[in-house]
Length: 494
Ligand SMILES: *[C@@H]1O[C@H](CO)[C@@H](O)[C@H](O)[C@H]1NC(C)=O
Ligand SMILES: *[C@@H]1O[C@H](CO)[C@@H](O)[C@H](O)[C@H]1NC(C)=O
Image (cartoon, rainbow, N blue to C red; front, side, top):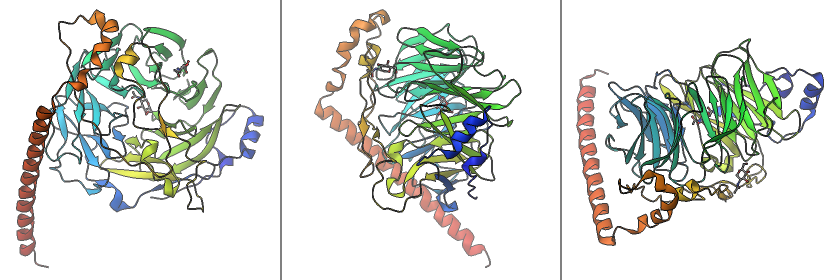
């Protein structure tokens, strides 16, 4: 694999006016010299059978502790969860998360608990999993909670950015459901808003709104708690192929899609006036869906085409022409999916400003984006305070109408993952009428106080014993394997 730095002047898309082109060339940017680099071979995750299911999600989710990858699994659906340091060849027998009865289509790590991940599947369910501290030692088939409510496959899963335990799912039944995962209840169902398959859903920065892109070519801005569409752009991109739309931190929307002539496009929209785009850029005529990955702190957006072998990145500013091409990272092999590390997972000592986990057919290859700097000191201009792991609100507060921006942390001394609290689901009395949710919320606040210390420590003890047993089993099976391999070795005539 190699690195290619195309000079910024020879950008990959055409502006309609020469004037904009000129302005772009002279513009100064600290991200101008960002370069990408794939890690060495021994730092890849090898021998993974990446899922072949036809669905345009990213197939990979990353946090500062784990990389999760949707894989091929016979007779069901599964994904791998690997501690980040578990590089090299992954044994066929490596345990998976395997509770779904149909292929897994999308996965998302909880932003507020690095041990918790949600999955959506062709089996029409959403499941939430609690991964043990150091990863799986035995296959995991039992989720903490199963969320049932969709009538068709569930292709989109995304956690609320700032409220604890709020999870959104969207299915091929064209419905969006927002769950309180802490009680296992579906709280909001958006039924009649999308006449066709939803391609993508994105929360805004404080999670007060969502935007969706749909097969009917519309981008919709929705207030989910009022269950109303507050803005809509029909034919945002006129081509028939999939679109993506994500919120930027200033509340504008960035979308990718195809023109009528099948050129790939990148556009910006002002939610207050969606009639005309703020800008549209044509890029090329490849046919992979452009997946946008966005850094809300620096306003850099990375476009990874599915099936492309490049990552293109841009800086977004609040003055015309708004979108500034920075560079393209090119490799030889196409990407089947891509994971994107949250900012707090980056190595600030190396001036790393983004890290991707590129899926090949049979491996996952980290790609590091770096700003070249000579100094060893913390580069605070590259690292504005970023969203930390603590939620701003409880689920009940959010469902009750409150909003809150993310709680920011400094990356000055690097981020050290803390201990995550155990995730628990406290089912409400099923006789509680759903319609009373508005007045009910205050009683939920007491739920974590209930188990007495002795019951808690007993449960903990049991969990530890269980883990010891499974570790013992693992050691003994590995031992057998080593003996077998040694026998085979001794038979080989060197
Ligand atoms: C929407 O698309 C972006 C870019 O592909 C992705 O990062 C995000 O996870 C998608 N959202 C959902 C809910 O699939
Ligand atoms: C949340 O974001 C919306 C949209 O950008 C904004 O109107 C609202 O004031 C924000 N609320 C809070 C509490 O930050």
